[in-house]
Structure formats: C-alpha cells, structure tokens
Image (cartoon, rainbow, N blue to C red; front, side, top):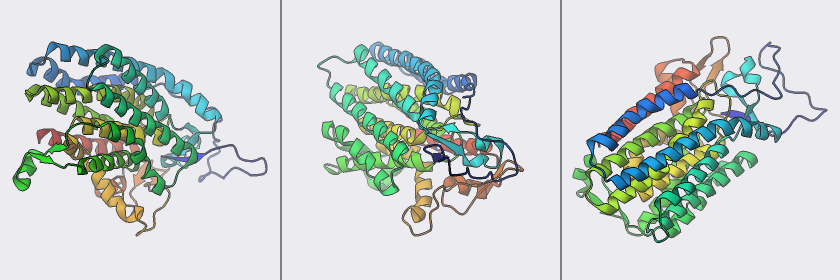
Length: 410
C-alpha cells in the first residue's frame, strides 16, 4: 500500500516534515533491490511437487494433452525470467513519470522515506499476454472450437490491465472501480457459447438436491458479478508487502491442482479440454506473479498497483468461468469474501472509511497494531496481537493455504 505522489513538489511548497526526528531524506532514484529469486524458485518447486505428481504419475493423462501443458509450462518459465529482467527497467520509467509511493507501514523510518515505484503490475500483465498469445501457435488450430473463447478471455484480461493502469494514474473513485470489471468482462460475456450450468460442491449437494444446477440466462449475469467480485476482492485484501501477489499465487496453485484432478477423473473430452484451457492461462499467471513476488516480498522494492490486482482477479475469474468451476473458485476466495463482508459497513458509508484502512505502525518496535477498520488484516492483528509486517503476511497466507486445501478436499 502506498501514499501516491504524482509529481515533484512545487518550488514554493516545502516538503512535508518526517514523522520522527530522523534526518534521512527520500531518495530521488532508489535502487531496486536484487530479487528474492532463489527463495521464490525453491518455494515454487515445493509447491509444484503435488501438481507434477498428479500430472505424471497419479493420473493417466493423454500424451497430447500432457505435451500441451508442458509447452505452456516452458513458455511460462520464460515469462518468469522476462518478468525478473523487466521490472527494474520498468521501475526507472515509472519513477520518471512520478508514479511512486511511500510505504505507510514503514513511516517514521528511513525505509518509509524511499520512493517506491508503483504500478509494476503492468509488466506482469504484458508478459502474461505475450506468453498466452505465443502459446496459441503451439496448441490451437484456425478451426479450434476453443480459439474464440480463448481470445475473448485474453481480450477481457487485456481490457482489465488497461483499466487498472488508468486507475493507478487517475486514482478513480471506488464507485467507478466497481463498474470497471463489468466493462472488461464484456468480450468474454459476448463470446461465451458454453453451457449455463454449475457443479455444486459435494458438501452442498444434500441441501440443494442436485449435483448440477442450470442457471439459464442468470449464468451470464453471474459471470459478470463474479468478475466484479474477484477483481475488487484482491484489490481490497491488501496493504502489506507481498499480500496481493502472495494470495494470488496461493489461489492460482490451488486452481492448477484442481484442474489436473478434474482432468484425471473425468471421462468427458469437453470437460477435460475446459480444465486444460484453464491450465493454459493459470501457469503463465503463476510464473509472472512469482517474478513480481521476488521484488514485492517484504521489504518490498516495488508496488504492484491496482493494475496487478485487477489483472490477477480478472484472470482467475475468466478461468473459473470457462473452466466451469466458479463455485469451487468462490471457496478458494473465502478469505477475500470474509474481508469483503468486514469491509461492507465502511465501503457503504455506514461507518466512516479512511483513505487507507491500514494498521498502525510503531517505528520504535517495528510492530503493527490492528485498528478498528473492517479488514482481515486488522482483525488478524486484533486476534493474534501485534506483529511485524512480514509475520502478519505469512499468517494471512497460511490462512489462505488452509482454505484452498479445504476447497480441494470438497
């Protein structure tokens, strides 16, 4: 989370005094710290173990499908490397245009006075689109039945990246932000020609009375609302280094494992292709997000901006819709749902809502204290007590991992 400053102060305006007696001054051209690439790669290898086990050993998956998944994985790894290289380059450009912020959760320390480049989600979004477009050459033919929906999905994601970057630059009001995903989802909604049924999670079948529920025309309305929720839920469950990207990576890994499980147990070729379609978009999302996480993990040297949160939310909404497991996706998003429900009184104006609903930072101890604001970040601090920013992020990600494990078990 950042306090944005779009341009340098005017010559007649003195810069705001620091909150403490420190004499440190904001750096005019901060150095982007080396990425935590080694730690991220180790974490990725551990996280990929169950996925690779299911793909190569546990299930008997057709060689052609496995080949397509591996080609996509190789391209995605290339996207990871490109992201690592391009983020420092893009950081210099956004700093020149005064797209930077100060880390509020380090206010009163020398780190809190450093200009942190913002909106670096634009790099991830562009690399993702390039990887996804290049993959078409290896997998889809001109008469492929999935090509229209694949390109419609990419159009929606591209639209959301553009609108997210516009939001970062223009600082759009919240009421308008709620509408943006609906606009970005239009290419997908217009091109969608699939069925209008959803599969009910096993724990809910006994209450609803059926495993498959046909929603009819309501399904497209549901698709639009899901896109709105996913994009904004990632955006408001934020505020500490690594949380936005971290939660995305955890959910995306769960989506990946869910897809391969469904491919393994299904005998319907269309169902298998729908989940393979999802894998083709989720693998690049994970790879590029891991590249960004290398720079965004505590202490963050870049901010992801609304560009990334909108992009990540829309991508996961798209794969959930076209993969026909949006109800399972909502289980994965349970922490985001809880955070949204906690936020409703403030977002609706019932309770005063400050611009930044962040915990209080104590520069003497380096600990965060929860406020009365309705966010999962603050509630976690009130439950578990004062924490460092890094340990708080780890707790929230452990909660996310626990929830997605429950979703996979369903």
